[in-house]
Image (cartoon, rainbow, N blue to C red; front, side, top):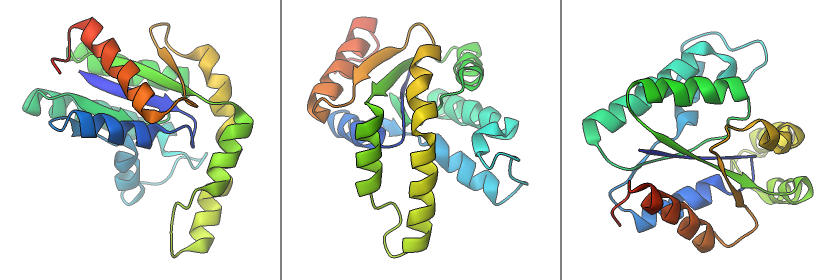
Length: 184
């Protein structure tokens, strides 16, 4: 089972994933963004500059998820923004063809609050130029990411991203227990 934590940049995906990992120490942390970073060094970038637009990225996310699930059989936590509904269907559907269910959560945070959080974040300490570039890119994605809520798969669980992380982790774990897929 894969716990996919979605939401805008600055919504708290990584913080929630870390709290879930703390509570489920046997869980595997799978960051699909790392697949994109790997591809950047191998193939030409997508014209958009977003590695999610590369079919190879989506395929490798599915295959990496499959390998982790089949070879390790553990609870997998995947914090990753995916707001293109076609890409979400492609990834979640690809995993489903291997019999790997994905429980999809979306952290909903108002755009103004996201902008505040992103502006305060330090992403690349020691490299102010790179930090500013990433911050600009993330800020430019806020409207697209917040609008994505209307296009998410129907079984997505929407979480209030302004709640304390402990409360959010409780909600995620309750959903998995209700599914009968988490024994903790």
